[in-house]
Image (cartoon, each protein chain N blue to C red):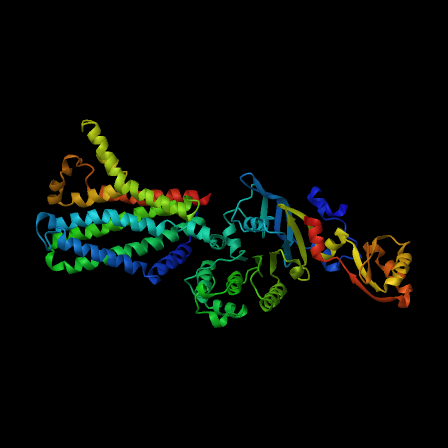
Length: 335
Length: 273
């Protein structure tokens, strides 16, 4: 698992050479593509004696859908706050759209940024429409844009209702509508799907796809990997305030090189036959279980294992193959 | 640094509307009206008379009421302006907008100040209109001065409240700090001055006493209202301590304005960091 121990390597080395066969062409194109819209260099942030962010380097390209993955307290939200210029880094620098986030001129960059904070808190005494109108005014967006945004997040029937009466999911959707005010070029979404039901999550990602098609750059964070792994172009795994790995899902999976697991369903009498058939192959483990044999091997031995099992013919009742999930990759990297 | 009035107005508008909608303005105005009416009619009871006595006595009584009430109301109104947003978790979203911290702070202040000023003017204005038949032009002038200085008094303590809301770590501490400020300026300060004067036998400190009173907006307010009224002036015997050079109303009003600007400036400086 030496390839997982990326944190000890310097940032440049994090962009490990990628196996061309596995990396989708799109991913390599973005990695080498246009000027990044977000550039984070050597950013450190201390809170007293606690180092929340510990030397982060990131570059997000324009139009990219970028995921930040990490446990609670990994430093994601602190990173968001620094990228938004709400918090100054202790050292290092952050440029958004070519402007330092600490610069006076960053105010104008904010007009093109949408932000959905983690567990968004809105004003209970305002209605949904009034909430949007308040933020629209601050962003210099005409008030008539608000109704359309409510519709976009499925709250068109609740525009006159006070936020006080809203469920967590409804607040989250209203917060998302707020983030989309003024057609921002860049969206920061901190745990955007927390509190949403499955239908609302589906709708959220559909909207995200539309935004992406319009060329909006999106940075979203999550600790639920299964949800975002098929949806982001690239992601960074954050743990203990550092970027532990960065790349497309395929690249990360590749780099982690976690074992593939086979479940070979055979009658107990044929366990030995399976063991013999695989004996000469570089498998990691073969274990007899209740009604099946569990086999683990590296990715490069996968085809050989399948071929060997196929030669056993009708002895085998069934084979299921379990690829390492991003969850496994993530835990492998961040633990 | 460039300030965008539109951004300040957006924040101020929300704060003001919030206070109108939750009937804060109405409630405070009614409190002022009720107290002022009671005082106007029974304020002279100590002198053995009931009913509207004179503008001088009425204002003197109102001053003693307002000096307790308005600082308290202003401090309660403003103490959670910033710390409340921070604690609830809405501050980050606000600051992610194209708005500077100074604009946010000024917007908060102006919105709350407008609400407080409206309550004050409406509450005491109503009573003023009821007493209109009793007033001559001179009385009206004094009463208007009283209302105006009451507004200034509220603004100055609101300014301190905003500073508290910037520096306090949480709402609980902010409320404690606000009450402590009220205690100090309204209850303790004068006692300290008096104590110092008595302790030194009145020999020393006599000249610096008026200057020390400028260090308390509540005292400035009292002096402003008392000194404009000759009758009350001799009643209080203050003319002996207060030098003529300082007694000009506009100078004292300027001190009040300083008491509005200074805490706000400190708050703005603290909020930027």
